[in-house]
Image (cartoon, rainbow, N blue to C red; front, side, top):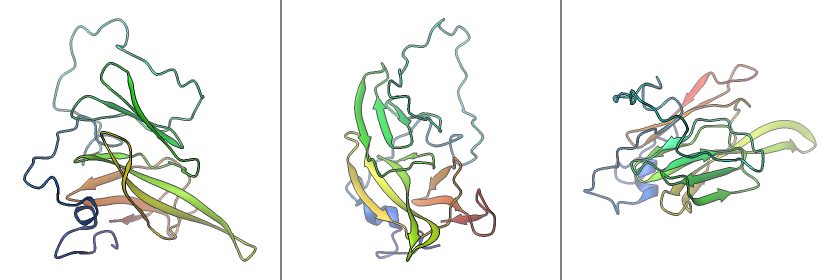
Length: 195
């Protein structure tokens, strides 16, 4: 696939885009990395829940703007929580204090973001509905890496025209490769893997 192409002396796209500033450091061990958590996407974890859970959650988010939340929250190694709506990503600390919000009115986030190493990866979809007056319904995805500490874009790369379903989807990142689905032969959903 075009994302896995060797770009710079054997490095994958993510290695070359994120730089080598963290070389030698072990990547953080995030608690909930992506939709359904981890490579197996089974929603399983290696730890056991407390037998005596508190009567109430330690904190809640009010969602005062009434935004659609399509994906489960992500939890990083510091127990910070990332909540994604269709055009915003918010980071909260373990006590529920808002640390940052990243918003782009042009974003349409239908694919669940993913934590990987020291970044939050977001696959957003833009649309090009008409080309020369003809309804093409082209989806123009962009992959963006956000810095975990600030929410600022470390880099962003348009991925060209891809046919993608309009329903909520997942994305996996493994061995510096981004994996997600596209629509090739079906009317909606995905039937082809992009790496």
